[in-house]
Length: 167
Image (cartoon, rainbow, N blue to C red; front, side, top):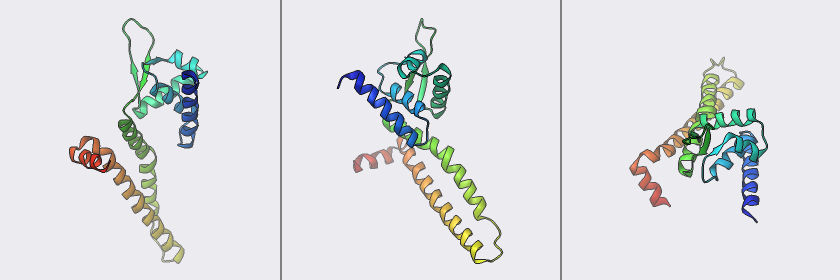
């Protein structure tokens, strides 16, 4: 397999995986392209490589920058904007985990807390509902706390040591 074919296959596969992870295919393809590029790429080159419109490229680059996994770079003497992706895979995982928690888990926790706090009139159905939603809230909260602890390890020398020992 030639380089260009391998690169295209990776970008297409990453795009397909992205849609399974809850982000759109083009956003995942742009991220893949930037992640495997050895130097920053202009929006025009991204558009050309992926055969997408300027609006599509712009919207998805903005979203990737909002996630903190793509950065804008400037080259001296160039009027174009260039983009690069986070190359540190540990940092990438941390940023994606934190962003998904903020966008998905925290709102779910808010709803679970709200619905489990209803005043029950004592019926079996209401007691069961409150019991199950409370258990679900507790479980999701614990999972989110574990995720927070795991993503904090990069800033904690002791946790880094533990992770290193576990490897």
